[in-house]
Image: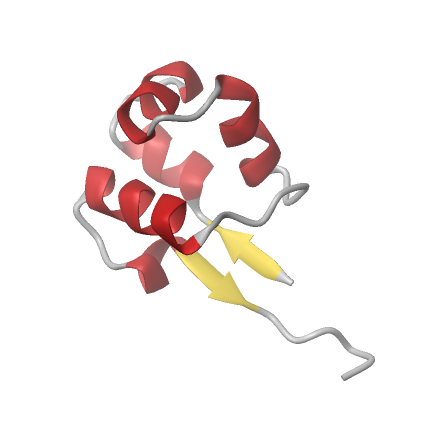
Length: 69
């Protein structure tokens, strides 16, 4: 499962979902679904989100192994 810190980073930068969505070329709903863990980003989208916040991809996204694995 991929976890992310998008909501936290947006709050730190005083940024709305819509603003981030415009900067990375997706719809606001996509950002909302990412934040809720309903959607896993492409590598390009993950890279673009990290770039907006000036951090590495690993600082935005982490992978947690399922307990079944």
